[in-house]
Picture 1 (cartoon, rainbow, N blue to C red):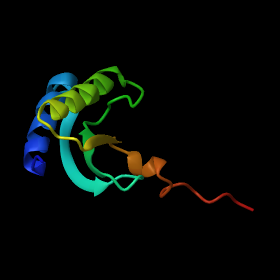
Picture 2: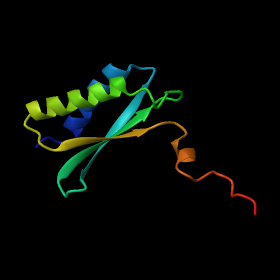
Picture 3: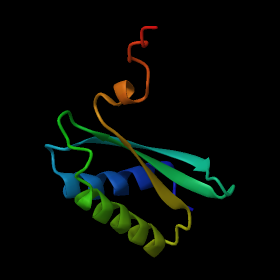
Length: 101
């Protein structure tokens, strides 16, 4: 079983190369259980400002590459991806105005 620091280094290398310095800010790794109670990784992927959240081709390829490379290292835990875009907190519902009645 790999350590979080090893997974973070591998994931950072893969996503930094796939997204480039203009889109990739940083990532963090959390170890949790998934919805089935299985041990898993959560890759918290932070983008730089101005990245279009609809641009997913490179991210999908990098995510698949991370999964393959983890399996090659005999790591069975699945790496779930959680993207974070600058301004997400607005989409989460904290800053909308209340409708007037």
